[in-house]
Image (cartoon, rainbow over all chains, first blue to last red; front, side, top):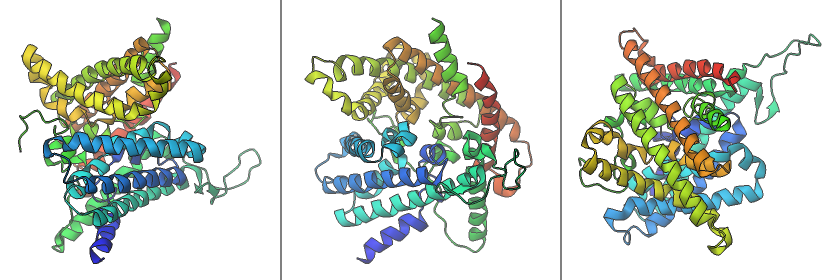
Length: 242
Length: 196
């Protein structure tokens, strides 16, 4: 059981996919216009991640090694399709606001990354907890960014108006929302601030001699990329460098 | 004709795939250190997205949504089918280029495998279906979108080359300053929104 709690801690804090590994940047930037959207996207991804980790871990001895990535993609795509229809049926408002980004969960590097680096090598129970941990870490990351953007951009949190909006016509004093934060440039700005903070923490941790996991996202270029799903292995050509 | 032009300009500039739809962020940040490599990546993306939107358009129209096959009920399989079609297609394009156009392969080859997991390719294929574009319109939309990607990544690479010489504060070195550049570019691209 300690192994399972360790997986949860690892996913949510130590290797948080958004803040530490910097994986899955497309949905992180795109759907965090409000906290609710961020939470919805995070939870949908969590469901897919847990189910795909579970199934891939169950099948890990059956799937031949050379065909594993296509097999993973089919498993993930099936669960994404299921989640898509569940959202469409039961939470149509969320489905409408997330739109295209729900089917795009398929190409989210977190899911293929966890399948490749954890679920395909470990037993079912730890894999499920790994999925829950990583998923909740991703959810927490998206929700945080969503809260920041919604608060600055609209003066609200989870749709509740926290800061009273100034009204020019009646002359009432209040908060003037910086609308750009819920538009596209704001996403880049918030993430820039966040990664700068992360750099700062990393430097001070390095000074104290602590080890910090390297970010596995694509910000540093493909050479240092830890995402094995993205190095030409999808359908192996035979001439990749190992 | 006019409609096609509007769709192409709309997807290239107004709704730029990277700067307003956030698809393909990974290569946008990762492969934009030099103008030359950025142009190579952009060229490969134009190539693959244009072909992929044609092929997925065909698959959708004649297999998934074909009334003769299960009364067109296979539509729900679109995500699974599209991602597999795109993965196979990239592999096929790579082999084809290697054999028949070695010079083009030299220029684009390195970037081709990276494109399978580029969400812009799947994104365009799904948008074409969602907006019920015909095959021709879909291809034009794909071409416009990918040219938008090419424009954005080349501009970013140009700025990054100049930025090499700037004195950036320690914490903002690397990804953060690139993201801020992207943010300013996104603001500049807002200027196109009055175009259509």
